[in-house]
Length: 224
Image (cartoon, rainbow, N blue to C red):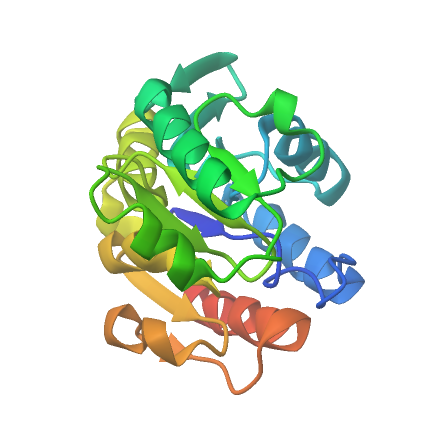
């Protein structure tokens, strides 16, 4: 039985230009109207996810910065994960070697560093092969994060906070940063991403907002 739905935002509820899809929003609200809380799980900063939650109309906890931050709504509590010192050390090394550009509002990031996708991600990984660091390309940014931090671990913690089994959580995602989240959820949907097929119960035909709509409809069908 599905008791909560976790969903990525960028590329799942949005198009390639990060414009939110209004039909996807309607479907999220349909899930919420069934008294199933929706958990937004994003690689973006916390204030972005807070604003998205308000405007979309979700009531579940928030997962931001790829699992580095968890926020519960009622009561309002914050949980921060990861070792920022080793992330900064790795970033400084790669920046000196390759010349990287942090994304806007980087000063608001607390548990990871994100850069624009104007540098080959494989060059970054090669540059940092001796560092204990994860480099993740989310299609919108490249993230430097603690290997012990991911959306899957965060979702497991959120399930405990909500006092539900992780098996009763459905997850929807479209990128490699969603892998662990889809892997641990009871029902998993990949939004057109074949690299997530091995951890997904269902894969949509399309990506981005069209796939997001299909994914949400699939989950809604499972609620019947």
